[in-house]
Length: 449
Image (cartoon, rainbow, N blue to C red; front, top):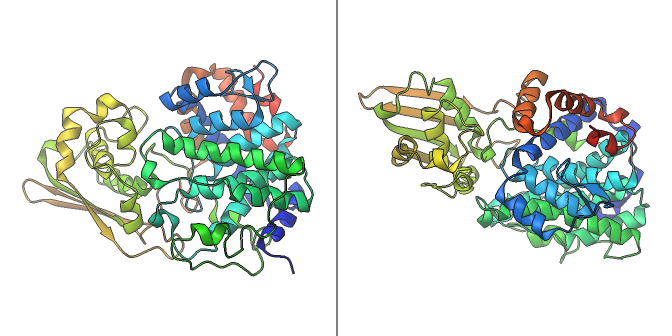
């Protein structure tokens, strides 16, 4: 009887686009749209500039860098594009991580090399998503609690599965690709709020493609590398309560249908989005005057609170993982957007003055469907005159797969992120092409002006 690694290898190698449910296809296309949008927004961030100096570009390279910034090998294009897409922490979330920011750059880069169709792009994304979700679902405990960065850890194996599917490797070589990628995976929550966080997901995309390409050339790995007692799942498990055997749900009880994608409406850690929604619903920026606030209390989950490293942020990078900044921005600016994620705004006097008045209460009441989060978040604002304004409970932030935004709102985010990087007509054409991704003959069409 085959074990987990071989079962995933067989699933990935045999997956066909026609088998993927239509709802899943629509979800994947949203992931492509959102990821490409935030890539434009982040492509001038300092971490991307550093990596561009590290990566060798060549006119005859395999894949496109940052949409129109040159070419390089597919793994290195995936590295750069993923780093840009995650630099602002504005990309979608699901399955305790950021699936699209790893999978979309990896799939687009390798598909450009292979001249794969849009339908193949979608199938490869689904192969990666299902692999990621299958592995994450087998552990009772949350990897953030141990210090693992799930997007970097699971994402590496998922990108290998996606790359193997694009190259149409057989089950044996796909198994080796997945197993090899398991030894390349890693990433730490200690690096949240620094340039290394986007580097971690970028390396996942790069390493996953490298594993698939090496397996295609004959590299071997242990065919039980995921489930072995010294293998991937045991090694990264926070408490060792991990399921190593049993049939896989991937491709049968579709993970992508169950979990979907959560589109972020604020460029900060997703642990804060429900609280921001709650504060904005109270009328912050309108009815709540910052100078009249005595205290803002955010009630969030224990694991959520553990991801928020910075209580007195001084930079935009720090602010992405700060409950104090999220609350202050919502009140001072009436929102938390790209315009607020600037060092000068973070350091502004009205924002800094609110930090000591923000209190975070961590609750140990996990959501049964998403245990990384509390069952719901709530906010409470106490004014200097004793008035108390309470908001919540909020279980699903707007943009969550179970509380989705409409196509118009997705388009608005895309336009805001792309900005002036593309002329309006080209920006509209790119959005339309992504909406019909399954019909594209090859990825190169996306880059034509």
